[in-house]
Length: 263
Ligand SMILES: Nc1ncnc2c1ncn2[C@@H]1O[C@H](COP(=O)(O)OP(=O)(O)OP(=O)(O)O)[C@@H](O)[C@H]1O
Image (cartoon, rainbow, N blue to C red):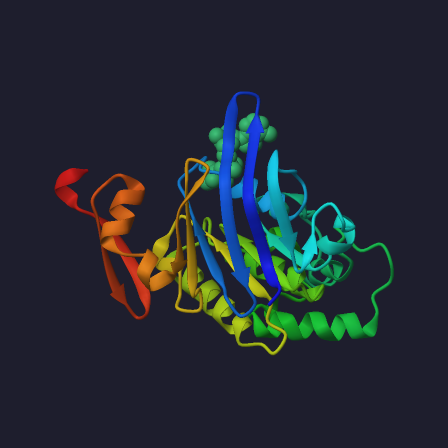
């Protein structure tokens, strides 16, 4: 079967610094993955490789069945959605919510052509699905952080991506907004045209059961990968964080706490 993502022996060096070392990772169709790692562990570098913005020093990458080096990356990127905080900064403050979503159709920032009726209908439907239809007509700067994230996810979905990367999507959200966003993400996975999801997060409790697999990155290497319920254990995460932690599974999610006497 063709993998959605395949990294084989991927390393990336900058000067004397080996930022990624010998990464082997395969994402199969039908799986959704959580990607975890402390600050500076190499997560963004891996995402940049998957999107073809950076090239490995050694190793091979295939995304959506296309081997890098033989594929037009600009074409491939049309099938990949990447929602990140750096995208947030690119949106013009006075842009209208509906226009932001529609602009995802052509992966542009801002609308340069007129709006097609089909695009409007699809954008409204996506906004409804994500629970942000009430924002139609609102300027981006008037939306809350959680609403902005939903708009950007709807925008990414406009291009019908086959792979959707949610890069610290819940940053800056309060408890209620975060749960609402997680619920919307869960809803995405049940769509007939659901993309493969990659959730990059610092918060283990955000890994809902839909994320069947988890990848732990430490100091540029794969520390562990596999089924989430096996990877997200007290023992493994204590090794991973180099700090004793407790994991308690509730509602299909792993809740992490530091063993207080050790902090
Ligand atoms: N272009 C570059 N040149 C030199 N070093 C780089 C470059 N890009 C990233 N790095 C370094 O590579 C390491 C991994 O960075 P990366 O951004 O991939 O980590 P991350 O896991 O995404 O971190 P965070 O959670 O803080 O966003 C860091 O030490 C970073 O300083």
